[in-house]
Image (cartoon, rainbow, N blue to C red; front, side, top):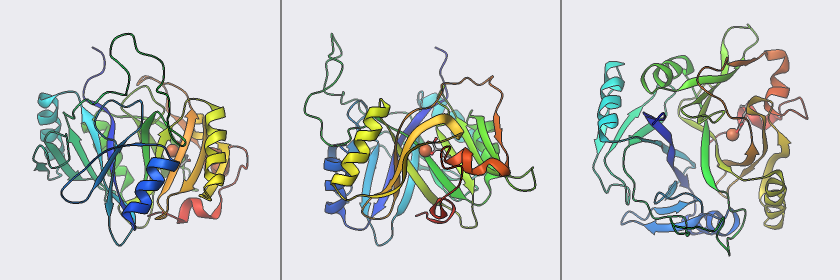
Length: 308
Ligand code: M3P
Ligand code: FE
């Protein structure tokens, strides 16, 4: 097997202001499948084509934002080895017991230098995608809303992206796919990191405040589905930030919009596939507009300022 170590972003826990309104939004409008509720009142969802129990967890809180982002790793031995690596890097870790998140094994949690809580875990129950593992049909009838196929990545805003990049690349096995430079032509404003052949599994933008969420992203299968998701946003009076458009960085065809609590989310398709031996792509400050929004070739005022 070629893919070892960290496999993929597996779950994100978001804070929402009104739980039931948010449940209706993520279930009926975004079109995720509700898979459980726990004793602490959290609600769990998965995208239809994911097989692990959940990829999104909602928690009601007075302020929006992200509690933590979890990555699934290959197995328990990998979890132990990466935990030791994070500690050797100089970052303390905490173990959360199996079952603390429904259907999920032990998690190793730590705070990265950008101020975000990141977790690793090796097990989550497989609940299937609604199709058989034998002779499956290609999709499941009766899906609601935008119906993305999977939770894909997060873009996080925080302080020390240089040290976070080192941690992800030197300890967690990620590689740099693209970066955006600041005016000085040296400092990285944004970094795009992959642990897979995706153009990014996580991205960071340098920001004065630690631990901020820019967006949670869900994958759709075609440009037509992206357009349809924009229609669904309009039908439901969802606040659209930008799009449909294309990112220069990663080449995804995208829409950014806001959930009822103001958390930004993205539905997108496309982007390229890559490998760890690919030369990272660099975007200069002069072209930052095209890097982020390829058609407008300019940032909107919300891109750098509005985060939760
Ligand atoms: C994405 C994406 C930036 C581009 C963001 C790209 C920050 O959100 O999914 O490709 O330049
Ligand atoms: Fe994105």
